[in-house]
Length: 553
Ligand SMILES: Cc1cc2nc3c(=O)[nH]c(=O)nc-3n(C[C@H](O)[C@H](O)[C@H](O)COP(=O)(O)OP(=O)(O)OC[C@H]3O[C@@H](n4cnc5c(N)ncnc54)[C@H](O)[C@@H]3O)c2cc1C
Image (cartoon, rainbow, N blue to C red; front, side):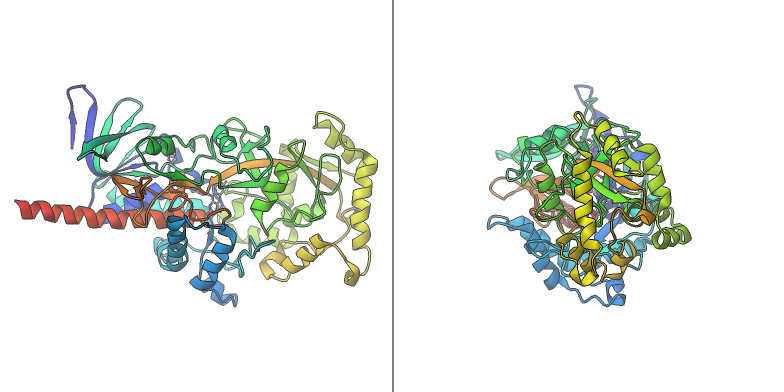
């Protein structure tokens, strides 16, 4: 399998080479090894980071027609889901491949994601959450966001356990190995991909090369370069909610070889980021799940409106409105009671009770409030301010901005106006945020995590809290265009021989299967789906070629 060529570069031959050992890369190597293929999987990071972003992801998945949905009385099917998907995607006529992948997702999520991970031993929490309900267009008509018990780290560990018997027999890992070039050969003036080369000039050759290198939103320069045109310009203080390994370099490499890379302006960012208290890389941020009952205020302390900002309906819309904030940030003002009930941070690291499967503590914190997390944020983050009066809060807010933008009277008036509504009998509550909170609370899992509306300045629910939030990057919805076999397509929609793309690198299929907005939780699932489609195609092609060679002999 291995030899040195005349340039003394190390050449190794496999059935397939996978660039990136994230969840997509791990899934494809497992499926290829099951069919006795020889596979090399390369990753720029060290072994401790195997699994890529899925190690730190939360583990929510949009799934359709599951037992958990049925037990909660939810009627869902591919038809309903596809309608919802299109309502959010805003596909245009040319989006042939994104549309095909969207259809495949809703039709196959039950077998190829839900059943697939269950067979690996993954379990889901019984409560199905209702995210992205839609704002101006319908989103998820029904709840379908399923949370993995153990977060997606559990999924990574289960896949690694399934890989273990094949390790060093069929599946060969190589870490700390950054690929910088795809290798080609001209056949009848058509480019055929024959492998790749790493930073140390080692060449890896195979009939099939699979790009599983993730998205590009860990590269803030690229995020700003492709920033959606209908948003206000990307703010300078944007945070990085991904990882620098998601730099988009392989997208460029594929593009150089004629692969079509599409919809890079479609991204799934978040509106409420704060700087990571102990950053491991530049601009690293934490993405907060904003509290539905918190008021979003502009830099002067006025409520952002007239349409209030409320999470859980349309993340993309929240991001667009955040991009309009002149100073590049907004405030969320709330009280301790709201924070303990509703505040959360996206990802496994701040959801330890789910990650570490501590059922009792998780239930206790859901029912009585997660005071532990609120205290942690108060202690760790200088963007999370706690005060006993509006004056004290104003001083603290001004202390972390360049100028004293907040006037205590303005902030006081904002809070008084909102609290005045809530001091009336509930039949007279006339405010769109409160209407949405009340609608959310009708769904039991949301009721458990959303406070009964009450005045923010209610002393028994104090102290007051202000959080300074800004935009944070997260997922690339666009990417390398692929057909349903995960083969990379050129501008004429012809597959480039020997080249595949999966996972976030492929925009979760087709170079942008989510279109403009995701129904949320379509990312990990999209990685599993695109990886399995690639493996099926490669397995069939390799068997076919072997047979052809045998027939020739
Ligand atoms: C905090 C957080 C929470 C999330 N929560 C959810 C959630 O609840 N639900 C959901 O669906 N999604 C979630 N996501 C998104 C989801 O985790 C990702 O979309 C998914 O894991 C991407 O997997 P991937 O395998 O395509 O890419 P990645 O996980 O990015 O893996 C790509 C790998 O390729 C390697 N690589 C890159 N370039 C090269 C190169 N040139 N040479 C060699 N190796 C290279 C990288 O080191 C990396 O290990 C979350 C993401 C984050 C960050």
